[in-house]
Image 1: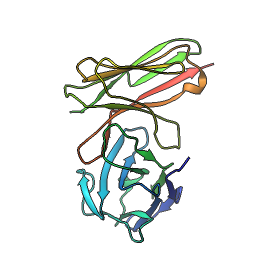
Image 2: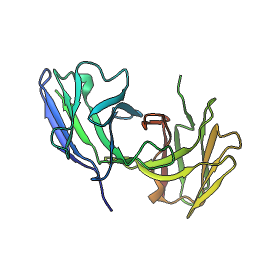
Image 3: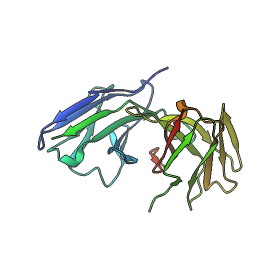
Image 4: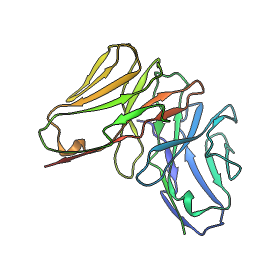
Length: 115
Length: 110
């Protein structure tokens, strides 16, 4: 079955450094998403992306964050000037459309630890 | 305030017991989805319910969508240790984003 793949699976970074999390969505999918899950907490929506632009973003997704689809296959989340509270599991997801009855497929996540 | 309220937040039971998890809202939805997340992995879709009053079964899991399409329940019969995980209900918005409830952490002890 096709799957969303994410790299790295785990990254440790110094506070203040920039981090890029990478995702390869399912190939025929058109909608892409990033979610965050702080340890022990709920899965929170960050941003949705369609047609090479952000279609919606949450309050969490401030100027520190950016997303890009640089080459038609990868979908990246950049976190600038990381803070301790950015430590979390970041999930990429994709869907073929925005139909509420259809599935969003999640990757296995990138665990970010900011020290 | 949460769009989706799940209860209970934590549940620890013995193997063989039955349980029900609830997902409630004051909003009406065209559909609702249930996901399961295991530690260190992403959420995986279990089921989508669409019609008010709909009941769907997935082996020992029974999902129901409320008649008014504001709430849903997940019932597990004869729980097994392999059912341990985080159960999330979610709804999709107009832009396609999926919003989750807080989740129910289920632990089934052998």
